Amino acid sequence: MNSYVQITTTTPSREDATRIADVLIGRRLAACVQIIDTIDSIYWWEGKVEKATEWLCVVKTERRLFAEVEAAIKDVHPYDVPEIVAFEVAAGSDDYLAWLSRELRRDDTSGA
Image (cartoon, rainbow, N blue to C red; front, top):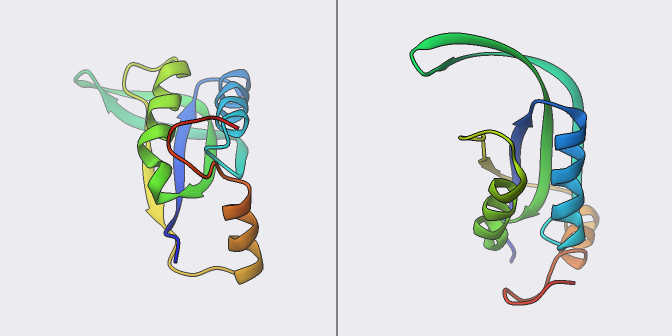
């Protein structure tokens, strides 16, 4: 049985979020990337509290592709230290998970 994850990352603009989604979908590293419009983030950065408006990307994929997803995000992300966090999917609709697996890259060496 496949192990599924949802990976989140935030970006400073819709354009950055769309670029990340396009790369992940184009390489078949994700079956779906949802872009959630503007969230307010408050966080520590370099010793002080920062506030930013960001876009949240939710990446639907399999655990086996995490390292490639992480590398692809880092390649195009504008932040020095982007959020890249994976959450295990405990359960899901059989039909949805089967679709997700069908849309992903089948091997670890070549693109779609």
